[in-house]
Length: 416
Ligand code: ATP
Ligand code: MG
Image (cartoon, rainbow, N blue to C red; front, side):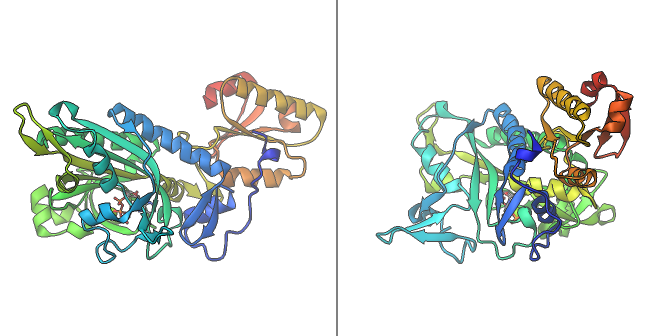
């Protein structure tokens, strides 16, 4: 894409009321626009990152056999009353509204109730099970505090997967596979080393749930990490009983701040009981379906990536999620430089590499370098009078800072 055509521009300052580093950088670099506290719009660069994350996650969900769907955000009051979740004293972050005839509605903060009700229309026999379904959907939560930028928003993108099994064994084996899929997702985005599977409070059907907590100074959770065992315990269940359950010793645990990027949960029969999600076994006997839910905050993950992968100059995108792979900078206006840069651009595009080409005439070299560091595309390629004279290109890696002069033929080998 030609940078002169990109309607977003970088800016020197973030809005005064923005305190979170992830949002400051994303706003300054033109990835998101802040509508109000806890509400962000995604601009072209930001949407490219979000879509890359979605695709990484979707691929793993499909490997699990998950079937993609898209549920409505608007939901009526009745189904939440069935599980006692409509009451504001039980769920304190509802956004509620009304129809013209005064019927009460809400913007869903999660989708266990709607999906259980839908599935009750399709499941009747053991032959219909097991299966799983997922969506990428905007969730609405009236969060009390919204100081963590896109990591805690009032409107945010979540991937939620739900599993439907005949019995505990079948559920456990899916749960294990889902856990592994999550591990692969966090590895793909470069967060494997700092993301811990964390024991957190369960519910009436299981002792613990599992959170995926990414160590991060600005995280809102406190966890106790065992680096040796590569697991952690959330402060909410950090007691002698939990440590004994897991064999963990207080000496070996370190207190860390972390951000919860994912959460997987055994739901048992809570929702299937409420919505008559039953199946008949081989003998015609009826049983409730065993459910699990598996949440992952896509936009929160984007924020966590920025918190972790950035420096004083800007963002440092991991290659798997970067909005473009190469940032091509043309410095100088001579026709020789211009045609050289144009041909590099064409060559990269032909090879299927996504390039942001900074061919702006009204920006200085200094501005182009600063913008490039701020936007954080993994590879920067410079075409200038100097490089054209030597017949080479200057290639810089945003992460390592390493600079190389290379032949045009070698460029593809480096950035592919
Ligand atoms: P938290 O404990 O951080 O409030 P939660 O336990 O309420 O999150 P879940 O209901 O399990 O979160 O939602 C699944 C995932 O959605 C979370 O793991 C997180 O990644 C993401 N998420 C939850 N709340 C927000 C939010 N306000 N903004 C952005 N992402 C969120
Ligand atoms: Mg939580």
